[in-house]
Length: 421
Image 1 (cartoon, rainbow, N blue to C red):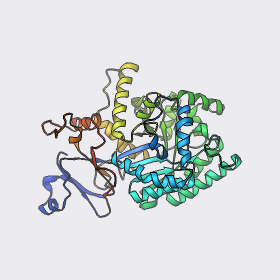
Image 2: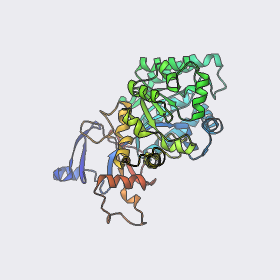
Image 3: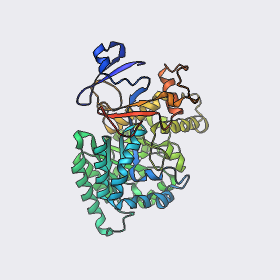
Image 4: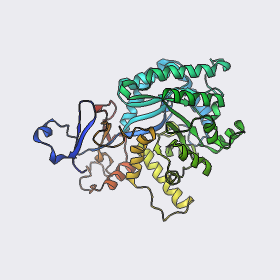
């Protein structure tokens, strides 16, 4: 809609969406006029690591396991002091909002107090957030816990956090039981964590098939499993409430099983290329009937902006389509299709498509306002002399010319978030 009005009710829901010329003079007088900015659904980041945000841009091309040891585990260990989380988490959520993200599914750290502090910061900020305390019992960076006590302790801590925060803020906050990945977890932890998620009605999140060396190590540690995905399947971790990040190097059997179980995927192209893990065959995943959304995977990815993730993803899929698959005859994903992956695709992955992901009456008013003028190629130009009335062309400009300053406002349930502008 070129010029529209979105009516938000007192509860933060979208009451109506209609052309602006249908508004009465009184409605026009009371409205917040955001023109010429573009109003879009808030972006949904399906995979990020809160404590890693300060590391964004570090570790280019390091192998995954080296990257974890040299950069990731040390910064996560710093959150053993909950004061660090209390200081950084508010700024991290402001940064998400400034990038246009109104919903984030994210990993915390292994420490209960720090994860609790992150939830408190999300509650105060107003962002829609689903967070989880990282669970690790085979490999862990917390040397203060007796190894024999880790399993019982991490389960108890995760339960306490879930009971405190899942569904808090009238459903704006949620909990995701979060075993880091198969390499850091025993089969018992994976099974117990999946059972906990089912019992409490939470989400369950982990990583799968990001890196070939990782896949080889999983095969060594779990010799009875048919493949990487089967490790999670045997644990009861697959299903519509499970979100697995990456899924680059899946076998046909694994892909079919993900589709069969309704397991969701978080596609993180910026991270995948930054670390050098590979390029997901996205068209193949979607054709298999798998629900896919986008993730920044900071700090594996170097930026929080999902517009940047869309841009990187588009370039990567073009390269795969032409150079790897040799399928030049297939149409590339359109800009609008990339936007849908970052909005409605993410909502579907979380099972929240009835609430968020698009601008429709009956949904909640999770919105962003984007200044297309901030993407103009010429300094000082407002872009008024360029015809961007075609939605695909407009979104193309916002994706491929995205800037840090273009998000001018973000709202969750009609409440403006601190960060943008």
